[in-house]
Amino acid sequence: MPHPSLPLALSLTSSVVILSLGLAGCTATNERPPQQTLAAEERQPAAFPDQRCQAASRDRGYVEPCVSVNSRDPNTPVRDIPGSSQVINRQLIEDQRALTVGDALRNVSGVQGR
Image (tube, rainbow, N blue to C red; front, side, top):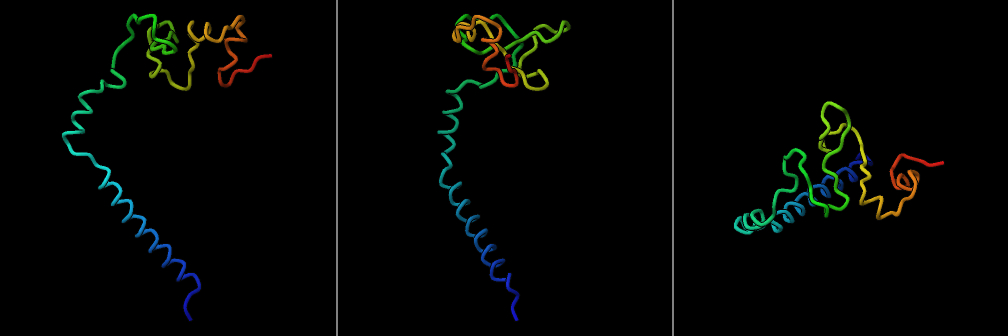
């Protein structure tokens, strides 16, 4: 007498094989020729250059590249701070029209006003 779960196992195995073959075909058709890839890489600058903090222009918006988290290294890049952090800079406070500290902290995750 055949095992009742054998047809299910065979159908799952064949589904996985068909899905794998289908995905392999997708990746092969979505590849670009090497000359197009190289041209796109040359046009785009690096997303996150490895730099220490420098004086930034006034039109940086909400981006705050450096913060002071301790007295030993006052120009710590935000990406080097362990844990989660959120910077509220002057531009964000002005855009929210915050008049109090509670107003400024209104959109900070994990902070609740009274």
